[in-house]
Length: 213
Image (cartoon, rainbow, N blue to C red):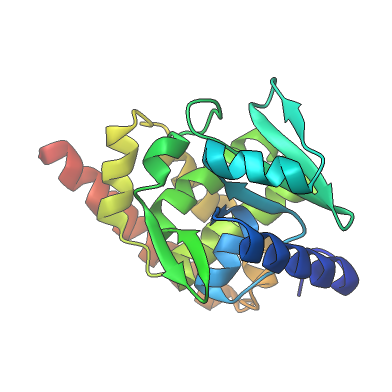
């Protein structure tokens, strides 16, 4: 199952390949989740770029600065592209720090799963009652199940960047989600229950360990 129609997904993927080939960017968002998990593609393209790269992008595409959301926006091949930059964009982990949390996969510079999980949580908080929020929750669960998340590293990041409510929000998503699991092809109620129990136990263990230390 996919959230968006096939033609849009194909166009978005081609746009991502085009941008990745031309510019030195870090992939975040739904496509980063897909690269890590190979499950559920994305409609939009989200990247981080330094100011030098941003200037190069400006020479190729028309960019709109969005001061309210603190990002740059472009429409490329009818696909929405959001560009976040250091010392401007308001992300739970600053973009200038995210540059230190990158892994190279399949020709892409991709945000590691733990900080990517936090980015996805912020997106879900902002639009949880929409179809995009549903996709965010599915991506969050997808990362937890299929991307070898290091829960200890995740908890350490929430502590370092003063995000104490993020583990609580993550617990809510694990507990309350249902149809989000089905988007990943997980429909057996017993299996869903076991996955929830496993994830909640991991989260609780690392949260308690962090409190002790």
